[in-house]
Length: 156
Image 1 (cartoon, rainbow, N blue to C red):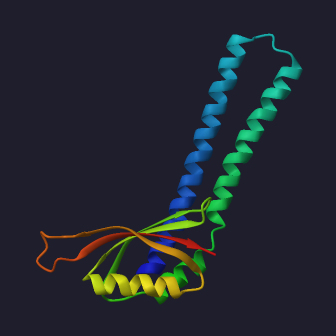
Image 2: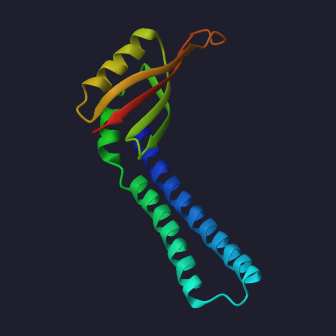
């Protein structure tokens, strides 16, 4: 259920991000058009067409980036994480990078054995490849001494 909730939060966050980026792009385009009009009040139609083509190209690039994020294989990714679910692991964050087909997982393990078992389960999953432990740190201030970790994994 936690992973499903994280999935919903991620999708909603991507929607808000898309809305924010679209609004920012529109505001910036308007400012550029105003600045160009002040600099070149008698600009010819050919120059306007070139500027419009450049603007459209930039908008397409932003839209493609958003589409790439939204078209991630979320269900396969979350299925792999659910399969590796353990009471000894608390997953604290999931950060996908669509361009690199990489996902960064942040979490906390009760002990090193639980952490390495979690990594082995992820490595055995056919949806995940190249699972690497990027960082680990024992939480000395906690009496149970859990291990905070960061994993990077590629997905197929």
